[in-house]
Image (tube, rainbow, N blue to C red):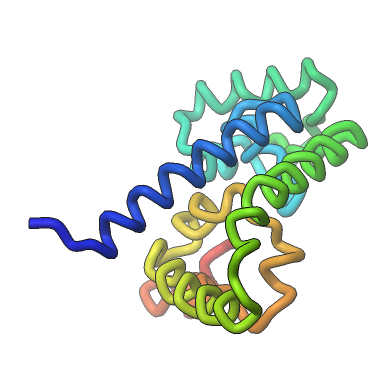
Length: 181
């Protein structure tokens, strides 16, 4: 009935998320959705509320309310969008500091979990986790959702993002245009 690696992965994933949520809430004073919104807008400034909705997994109206809260807190500002009919989201200086605090809290929550591993074991774990991560999304919107709390500087410090395949041209799209990141 049970597959031991599946069980160990499940226990680990749950414990990691519990630590991550608690650390982000304590360190940055934000909920998971607010934290993810700030990290995403920091990485992809100028995106729309619709773009953000897909990343944080909320409906359009709920995302508008999320953005309203972030604007009220002085973390995000709305600007005229690319086509002048949409609104672009940009972090304020306070929002940028808050996003940095989220990423620091994330690192502080996760780093101790690897403390007992040797450099060789860490390299093996990185390779294996990369293989697992590569299967977490098939397209760019899915990758952005999976990576909603990703420290992109750390992720791109090594060879290739595990979800790089989601940026390749999509043959089903006109003229083979790449999926928007």
